[in-house]
Image 1 (cartoon, rainbow, N blue to C red):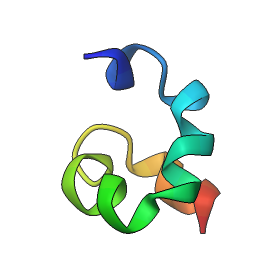
Image 2 (tube, rainbow, N blue to C red):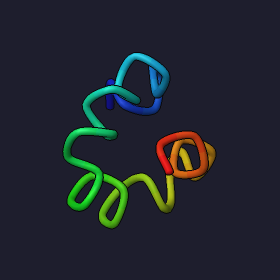
Image 3 (cartoon, helix red, strand yellow):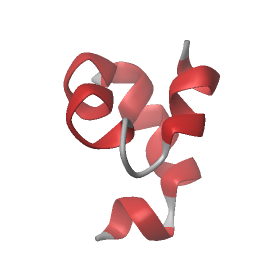
Length: 38
Protein backbone atom coordinates (compact mmCIF):
# COMPACT_ATOMS: atom_id res chain seq x y z
CA UNK A 1 0.00 0.00 0.00
CA UNK A 2 1.12 3.54 -0.70
CA UNK A 3 0.06 4.68 2.77
CA UNK A 4 2.58 2.44 4.49
CA UNK A 5 5.42 3.61 2.26
CA UNK A 6 4.63 7.30 2.49
CA UNK A 7 2.47 8.14 5.52
CA UNK A 8 3.83 11.68 5.73
CA UNK A 9 2.66 12.52 2.22
CA UNK A 10 -0.70 11.06 3.12
CA UNK A 11 -0.84 13.07 6.37
CA UNK A 12 -2.56 15.97 4.62
CA UNK A 13 -5.21 13.70 3.16
CA UNK A 14 -5.63 12.04 6.55
CA UNK A 15 -6.00 15.41 8.22
CA UNK A 16 -8.80 16.28 5.81
CA UNK A 17 -10.58 12.94 5.92
CA UNK A 18 -9.25 11.76 9.28
CA UNK A 19 -12.68 10.64 10.44
CA UNK A 20 -12.50 7.85 7.90
CA UNK A 21 -8.82 7.22 7.21
CA UNK A 22 -7.53 7.15 10.79
CA UNK A 23 -10.36 5.06 12.20
CA UNK A 24 -9.92 2.41 9.53
CA UNK A 25 -6.23 2.31 8.64
CA UNK A 26 -4.35 4.97 10.60
CA UNK A 27 -4.90 3.17 13.88
CA UNK A 28 -2.96 0.15 12.69
CA UNK A 29 -0.51 1.38 10.06
CA UNK A 30 0.58 4.86 11.14
CA UNK A 31 -0.77 5.81 14.60
CA UNK A 32 1.86 8.54 14.84
CA UNK A 33 -0.03 10.45 12.15
CA UNK A 34 -3.06 10.51 14.44
CA UNK A 35 -1.16 12.48 17.07
CA UNK A 36 0.20 14.80 14.39
CA UNK A 37 -3.21 15.36 12.84
CA UNK A 38 -4.92 15.94 16.15
